[in-house]
Image 1 (tube, rainbow, N blue to C red):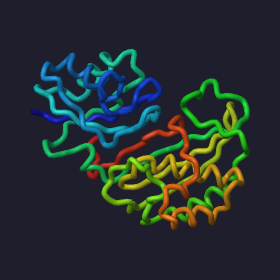
Image 2: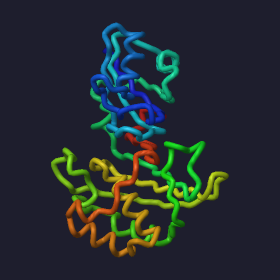
Image 3: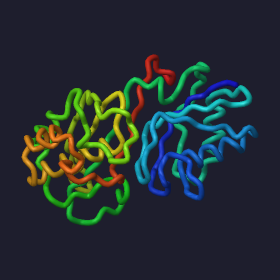
Image 4: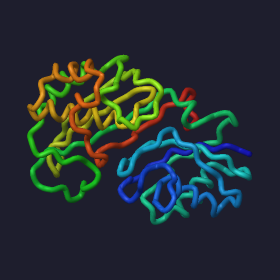
Length: 255
C-alpha cells in the first residue's frame, strides 16, 4: 500500500484536539472522514504530534497508507474538496517510503506562540492569540528564556498527565520578537526542539509572560526549572495562541 505524507494547516477552535475521539470533533477524525470518501479501506492517519483542544497548526505532518496509487497533487486536491467547510487544509503532499513515519522520522519540531498586548478584547484574532493586557518587557522575557535553553529536567514545565518516560528534553532555541500590528503589539515566542513534553510550550510561555509583566524576575525562571516541581511553574498559557509551525525531516520529503 503506497504511503503518503501531508503537511496540514488548521484552526483548532472547533475541535477537541488532533486525536480522534468518540462523539467529539477532531482534526484527525475530519481528515480520516475525507479520506474514506476517496478510499473505501478507511485509511488511518499517524501524526507528528497530537495538538490539544484549541491549538492550531501551520505545519502539522501526518502520513497514511492508501489502497491505490495517487498523484500527490491530485490526492491533496481531493482531500481539500472533501474537507470543506472544516478549517483544515492540506498544503503539501508527497509519496514516501514504506518505513517513513510522520512521528518517528521527525528530527525537529517548531512551535510559535502568539500574544497580543492590548486591553480591548480581540475581534479578528479571537481564539487565535492570547490577549495580555499588561505591557510586556520582551528584554526581560528573553533574559528569562536563556535559562531554559539546552538539556534540562523539565519536570516543572510539563503536565502532570504527561506520558513521556523522561522529563529530560533539549530546547535548541527560544526566540522572542515584538512587532506592531493594527490590533496591537504582537509578541511571538518561537520554540525549537526535537520533541516536547505535554504542555511544555504553554507552561514556558505562561512563565515568560509572568516575567514580562513584572511578576517574576528573569532568574526566577532558573529557580523554577531547578525546583523540578510542577507547583513551581508559572500559569499555563491558554491554547489559543499556540501553533505547531513546522516539523523537520532529513531528507525533506516535501522538497
